[in-house]
Length: 294
Image (cartoon, rainbow, N blue to C red; front, side):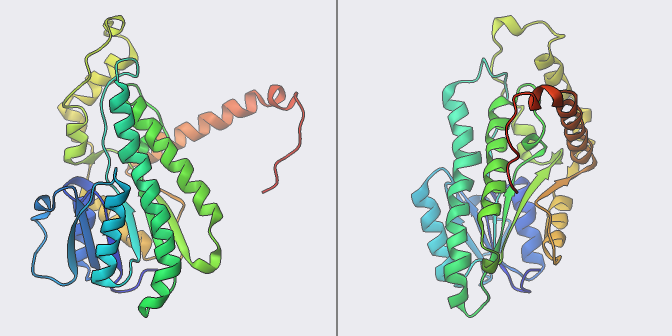
């Protein structure tokens, strides 16, 4: 459960889910450090509140991350929640994606959240107790339905989100319970936002071998560019409210899918994986070995 005036540090607040979380947090009387590459994109937030701080942050820069944390601590004295929300996507099949675009996705979607998460742990454990408040805090790493399920045309994006989920799950297992640090992976499904439209606006040109319209990459492209699809997406404000209310509970989940599409897709994927695992159990166990403890 969060303090009644918790300090939130949220990345990627210029639009979409990040902007919705920032707006919702501020409306509930919590203190907010909203970040974006350009603070001019945060004009929807008031400038005259001591409870709202606008910070310039480039998550692909460790120096920028450290400067942002220092600015938030100078202003509020502590941080209770870190939401790693900033993310990018380049749409196209893996063979056509450039190494530059793949690395850019990893920098923003994985390395940035990884650096900020590690810094946040130190703040929660070492800084917060000296602020007159309690030890601890909450890390929210925003993944996606694409952090559990992989689809054509998103190989680079999936790689970054799968990496983020693996890192988050591992680091959660390393934390001393005495530090009172909670970790949650948010896995939104289809959500109405500029991210969902911009990620398919500029499609990487296809390799000539992928011209067949029946290939999965083209079937998926047709589906994602159909205007009717976005009509099934949920409002970003509902995702923000769901996250906020979940963090008020005594116990929070490791993973929180949002939307019926996310829940159904992830459940179907996990069920299929378990069925395949059992089908090949005899082959897997035929090589011997022991059982890993824990």
